[in-house]
Length: 409
Image 1 (cartoon, helix red, strand yellow):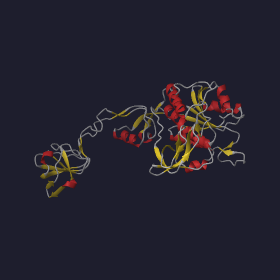
Image 2 (cartoon, rainbow, N blue to C red):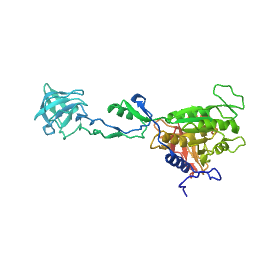
Image 3 (cartoon, helix red, strand yellow):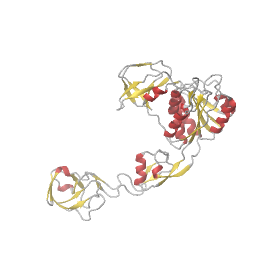
Image 4 (cartoon, rainbow, N blue to C red):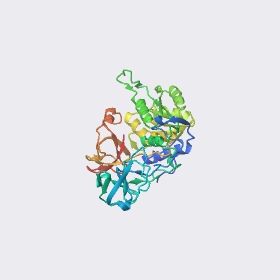
C-alpha cells in the first residue's frame, strides 16, 4: 500500500521506493518552505532565474493587425482578379491610404495591414506588371493576417511568478519593456564531503586516498539547478569535526553531505545530525545507485545525506535534491522528465529496486545503449554517458527494441 505521509524518525524506518521517496521530498519541502527573498534583476541577467512577480503585456500584441506573409493586401472579394497596386506597406512603417475595390497594396511580412484590406495574397500566387497585379487564387477573409491582440491583450499576464525563465521568457521581458524584474534570490547550497580518505583536487593522493570529486560535481549540479554552491572543507571521520562542518553548512538554505551515511563504524553523519535535533524523513531508498540516502531537517534547514560513491552522489542529487533546491528557489513546479527510448540491445537486471544506470542516448533521442561500468565509483563511465537508463523495480528483462524510460543527464 502506498504511503500517504512520511515519518519523522530515523528509528526502524523501512526503506522507501523511488516514487515514495520523491513524493516525500516534494510534499515536505513544499509544506515547510518559507517566503523566498526577492531582488531586482536586470533583464540581461534573468535567464535561468525564477520570477517573483507576474509579468503582463503593456499593450496589445500585435498592436495592429499585421501580415504574416509577403504579398499583397487586398479585399478578399476581389480575388482572384487583376488589381491596381496603390502603394507599399513594410515592417517599421504604415501605409496611410485606404484599399478600395479593385485595389491592392504590396505588403511585407510583419507590416501593418492597410485600412480597407481584409486578406493577404501570397506573392507566390501573383503576377506583377507595372502598377497592376494579377491574383491567381481566391482569398479567404483574414487569411495570413494576425489580428490586433491575438498574441496577448494589454494587461494580460504572459509570465507567472514561480516560473524559471528560459530564452523565450527573456524575449517576453524585452517585448513588453521589462528591463528590470523581481526574481527570487538564488538558494545557497552548502556542499560538505566527508571522509578521512579524501584530499583536495590539487593534491597528490596516496594510493589509499581519493580526490574530492563529489563536492565539485555537486557544485556544478547545484549551479545548473539555479542555486549558489558553497563548497566547505572536507569533514573528517570524527564527530567533533563533522559537527563543526555540519553546523556551518546549516547556515545555507540547503545542506548537501556526501558520504558517511552508511552503516560503517566511521560513518558518523547521522549521529551528528541526530545530536543537532534533526528530523529524519527517510534513510534508505530502493534504488541503484544510491540506496543509503538520507533526507531530513535540522535547525529549520533541509539536508540530504548523499552516498559517497560518485555515481550515487550524481544520481541522487538529480532524483531528489535538485527538486528540493528548485522549490526552495521559488519555483512552483518541478518535474522529472523520463522519456522513452528504444533499447539497442537486450537488458536484464535483478528486480526489486529501481535502477538508474549510465547509458548513451542517440543524437535523435530515439535509441539508448547501456554503458559498461565497474560500479558507482566509476567516474570515467559516467563521462561516457549522456543519460541514465531507468529499469523498473517490477521488471527483470527488456528485449532489444523494447521501449524503456531514460533520465537525461
